[in-house]
Amino acid sequence: MKQQILFIASLMIFSGFFTACSTMSNLAEEDNVKVSRDEPSKDCEFLDKLEGRSLTRTAKQEDALKDLRQEAANKGANYLVVKEYSGVGTAVTGLAYKCP
Image (cartoon, rainbow, N blue to C red; front, top):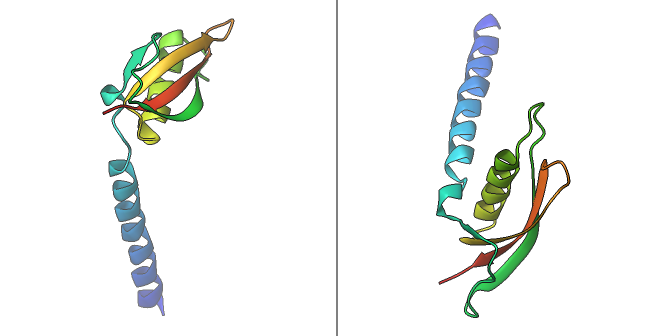
């Protein structure tokens, strides 16, 4: 009985490791997203309006923008138009596009 419990616990732990590794590899790279205040060319496809946030104690605009870029990358975007920063800079909104 003790061996069965240890075996099942080991399986659960190892399956958790594999799941975590595969999930992380599916995240898109934020570095592949160009950020601009200019509208994209006409051949770009609009994907979504997004919001990035920085919820840390020492929140900065750069952190909110990094979060927004990651959100855009996760949606498959490669171009991001920044629209508005919040008054304190802890949030930023933008429009995500997929450009050829």
